[in-house]
Structures are given as C-alpha cells and as structure tokens.
Length: 416
Ligand SMILES: *[C@@H]1O[C@H](CO)[C@@H](O)[C@H](O)[C@H]1NC(C)=O
Ligand SMILES: *[C@@H]1O[C@H](CO)[C@@H](O)[C@H](O)[C@H]1NC(C)=O
Ligand SMILES: *[C@@H]1O[C@H](CO)[C@@H](O)[C@H](O)[C@H]1NC(C)=O
Ligand SMILES: *[C@@H]1O[C@H](CO)[C@@H](O)[C@H](O)[C@H]1NC(C)=O
Ligand SMILES: *[C@@H]1O[C@H](CO)[C@@H](O)[C@H](O)[C@H]1NC(C)=O
Ligand SMILES: *[C@@H]1O[C@H](CO)[C@@H](O)[C@H](O)[C@H]1NC(C)=O
Image (cartoon, protein in one colour):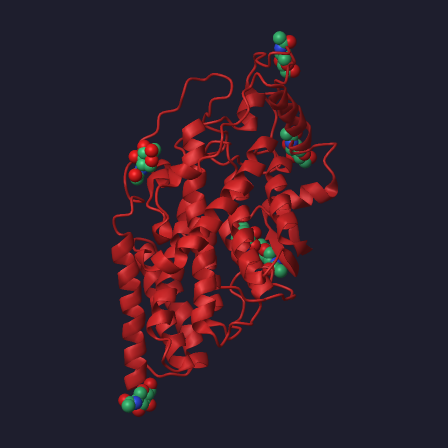
C-alpha cells in the first residue's frame, strides 16, 4: 500500500513534542524519549529498536481491533496498548511514572472517559493488545545469555575500545527472532569487509585517521556537524525524521498511522538484528584500536601508530566495526519512509540537539531520503568511529531487510 505523504515541516529539536492529534505519532515520540537516556544507563543498539517495535506492534494490534469504533475509542485503545507495552519492557526500571505521565497527559484530548462503557472496552482492547505482543516476544531470545570472548590481539580483530564497556553490546541480539516472521536473519549477511592486506583497507585507514580525529585539521565544518547532527540514537532520530516527512496527515486514520509506524519500527528492529549478525560474524576492529597499536602492521610498511589518537565521537561504541549499524538503521528507515512517500524526494527540515562538546541545536533540510541515509552513514566516518567500508554495506543491508520486512508484513505482522 502506498500513500503520498509528501510533506514539509520543522521538527522540534527534541522528543516530547506536543500532541498533534495523531495518537500513534504521539506514542512513538513518547517511546523515543524513554529510549533516549532516561532509561538507566540508556539502551544498547538492538534493544533500542526492539523496544519501539514492541510498542508499535501493540499499537497496531489495538488499532486493528478497534477500527470499527469511534476515533476517541481507537485513540484510547492505542494509548493503553502503548502504555502497557512500555511498562512491560521497562519493568525493573523507574519508568512507571514517566509512562503514566505520558498517558495522563493525552487523556483530556482523547475525551473518552474511562468509566463509560466505550471507555472500559477501549482500555481492555489496548491492554489485550499489549499482552498479545508481550506473550509473543517473551521467548524471542533477547533475554538469553550469549557469551563473547575477544579474539587474539591481531591487526583487524575487534578489541575493547577506550571509554567503552569491557563487554560488547548485546551479543545475543544476532539470535533474536526477527519481527513479522521475517525468518532467518543470516540470509541477509553482508559480504566480508576488505582484508587488512588490501589497498582499499590502507586507504580507508589513512582517510579516517585524518578525517575522523577529534581535532582534525582536514575535516570540513559541515562534516564535523554531520557527525554531531546524526549522533543521537538512530531510533529516536529516524522516528523524528519520519514524523517530519509524514506530518499530521494520518491523524484521523489511526489504523494507517499505526501501520506506518509498526512497519518502520519492525524494519528498524530487524535491521538491528541483521547488523548484529554481520558484526559478530566478522568481529572487525574499530579505527581507534588500529591507531593505538604501536607496531607497523600495514603491508606497505606505513606507520599509522598514534597512541594518543581520539575520534571526534567519543567513546567509540563497544561492538565491532563492520557493518555500521547507524548506516543499517538509516538504510532501513529510508526504505520504509520511501515506500510510504511514494518516492525518494522529500522536503524535511529537522533539528538535532547535540550535547557532545556543547554543540547545541543543528537544523538541516533534506530533499532526498537516499542522500540523508548516505550523510547519516558518512557521519560515523567523520566521527572517527567507523571505517568508510562499513558504511555502504550497512545501508544496503538495512534497505534489503526493510524491503523484505515490508513484503511479509501484511501476512505475518501479528506474529510480532
Ligand atoms: C465518571 O467519572 C467522572 C469523574 O471522573 C464523574 O464525574 C462521572 O459521574 C462518572 N460517570 C459515571 C457513569 O460513573
Ligand atoms: C539460520 O541459518 C544458519 C545458516 O544456515 C543456521 O546456522 C542457523 O541455525 C539458522 N538459525 C535459525 C534460528 O534457524
Ligand atoms: C610509529 O609511530 C609511532 C608514533 O609516532 C612511534 O612511536 C613508533 O616508534 C613508530 N614505529 C616505528 C617502527 O617507526
Ligand atoms: C582536541 O582539542 C581539545 C580542545 O583544545 C582538547 O581538550 C583535546 O585534548 C584535543 N584532543 C586531542 C586528541 O588532542
Ligand atoms: C537524546 O539525548 C541526547 C543527549 O543525551 C540529546 O542531545 C538529544 O537531543 C536527545 N534526543 C531526543 C529526541 O530527546
Ligand atoms: C538542548 O539540550 C540542552 C542540554 O540538555 C538543553 O539545555 C537545551 O534546552 C536544549 N535545547 C533545545 C532547543 O531543546
């Protein structure tokens, strides 16, 4: 299904935008805000997309189940589905009050009292939807212990990065059951990265050493800002981007809106698992590890050692380099937004509030989804945390996984 949602607007700099009347968009925004730092210690990469997929899955289930009811009924059902899904995911944290506050804040605008017959029924519909998703995901593998042993400290092999956790981010995520019955994620696995003996590898090493350093003298101001602009969680970022592109067009079409956001976030979650499959299949080192070696390891004899080298984006994330998950998420999001937009052309202006180095608010306008995904990908190279060759295969992986997710969605969405 295609809808032309060509739209232009200015997004708020942060999540928690005021309620626009699109109940699904409202809850995606609330959900994003909880991903972003308010959860104790923040969420790691695949869980940050797994979580929003669960919430949007519950929302879509509630929307489908209430589609013949009044708009207020649908909105109330969706809100309770979202609330309960959020709470289910974050049992054990202190987010009860935050989730309650998000629900309480939107109730007056919905205007269907909880003590009416319709109100009670809508609440029940929402609660059941959240329960259905929770049951479906209870044994999906994300809670499993999967150990990880670092490989030998040879050139090219992933090692602990400075300032990061000594344990890599969620090694079990590559084994999590994909959303919408996508099937075995390993079939999407990217080809291996170049070998350290290849000329392409040396070029990438030399390039990022200059371009990605914290105080690079060759990186342009625009590229520095790109690294900052795209730094936030891909999940909060691309959901905000999508909200700008879609605008408020689906406010009274709850089922359609719910479908868009579920497709987007199922695709993002699946892209995260696929990216993890690739990362842990190849376990490639990060640029900082390459520069902190003191020996000469490039076959040409070039000495790239610089134990004081620091990337612009700090710290380097604690999981292998290849492929870039930021790129994968961007490729996936662009694919879903493109499908709904009816093409690659957009006119979307939005902002990112950058706390790193006190950069502040950066606002940019995008006219192409492809160009946005590419800039998002390159931002990680300019940030000094990914080799260039980790980028395009990441975008391609996200794009492929997202399109495959869209293909099976109508048939399998309620497998969650
Ligand atoms: C519903 O609750 C409101 C206050 O929250 C109250 O004024 C109203 O009388 C109640 N209606 C019924 C049917 O109980
Ligand atoms: C996915 O496929 C790979 C390769 O054939 C296989 O090793 C793995 O067990 C499969 N995973 C699942 C969950 O079926
Ligand atoms: C390589 O460069 C590093 C950093 O400048 C230096 O400490 C090291 O001695 C050099 N190695 C060789 C073999 O020249
Ligand atoms: C980069 O410059 C900043 C500000 O002068 C300084 O604090 C930081 O240590 C520098 N980083 C490196 C790696 O030299
Ligand atoms: C997420 O948090 C970062 C810093 O913690 C902040 O810069 C960014 O604006 C936040 N994003 C949203 C969507 O709230
Ligand atoms: C950006 O984030 C900073 C630090 O959290 C905050 O003080 C500021 O109000 C934010 N600006 C906007 C426009 O959201």
